[in-house]
Length: 58
Image 1: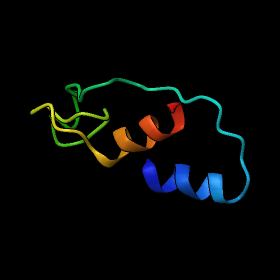
Image 2 (image 1 turned 90 degrees about the vertical axis):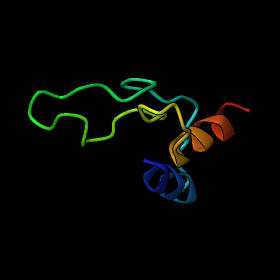
Image 3 (image 1 turned 180 degrees about the horizontal axis):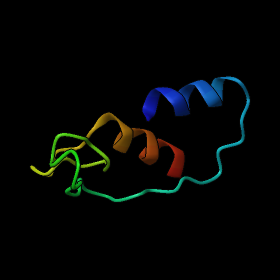
Image 4 (image 1 turned 90 degrees about the horizontal axis):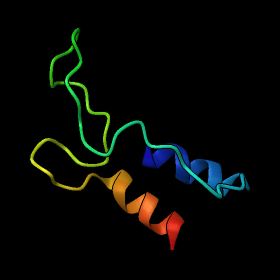
């Protein structure tokens, strides 16, 4: 997610907001815990996307 947001900003896209699917990973029936969705993993560690969202918000 962070690479896509950074690339969009470099192209001049106005990112005044972002939608989070979920703040932490959730269980997916087909993939179990193996597919990350949140900005925090199940051990509550920040992912790079959390920093991107913090930078956008501040």
